[in-house]
Image (cartoon, rainbow, N blue to C red; front, side, top):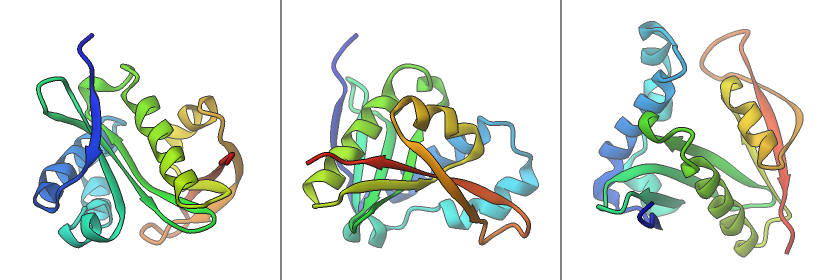
Length: 154
């Protein structure tokens, strides 16, 4: 398989990356009403790319096939990790998660935490993250998101 590379996102890619996130979320079978309700919260803005650690995984031809966003702190926050549906299961998510852990480590964090989509819990657990609780959804009353933590050695 040709080599994929990870690079910093550019602010002018925010709209395209938001579209990638929407396709990735839709992959899990959510209905249109749900996707519309969460659309704004899933939108990556130019200023997010400027302010945060946003990294793109490119296919060999330079096409973005996934991205992650890490917000520094201790713990660091994995705000986004999205993969094009056609690349789910290809190792793209694993590669992006490993990069996010490294970004958190370089930023001085002792851990990386994420409020995960319930469909992604198994993925994060396979990566070594541990379920530590639940976070109430700010968008949908009564819904909670699994909270996971990955210890960052460094």
